[in-house]
Image 1 (cartoon, rainbow, N blue to C red):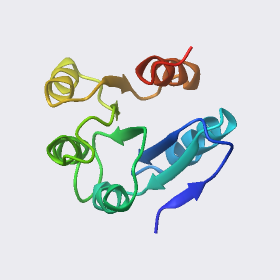
Image 2 (image 1 turned 120 degrees about the vertical axis):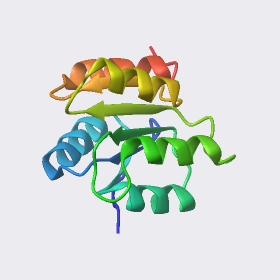
Image 3 (image 1 turned 60 degrees about the vertical axis):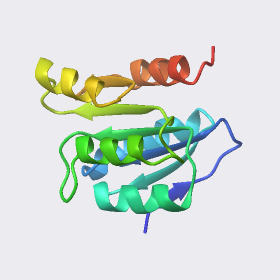
Image 4 (image 1 turned 45 degrees about the vertical axis):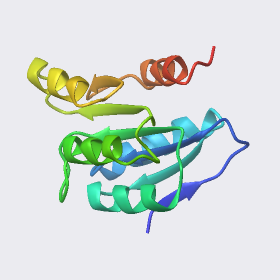
Length: 131
């Protein structure tokens, strides 16, 4: 079952990442900024979570057990309910080909791990049109 932390409503973000410390870090950082955060441990749980809820943004790990980030991105883009939901891909590799593939597949942004939480927040604010 996905973890959800609720705050005062700056938007809803789904974090799908196979690494527990990344999920905890992003949950804490995003919650402290007023976002309601749900987390999923893998792509299959991420898709299940998306099936029941709308999100303002999805953060996907590129390499996960089960279904990887690109497969999940493809499912998001092909689902009418979520086709326009912004997606940021996080990747351990950070190779140019991964970035190009993710962006060509419909990702709105791509960050390599390790990443700066401030940089991620700035990208989220930019994508969601917040100042």
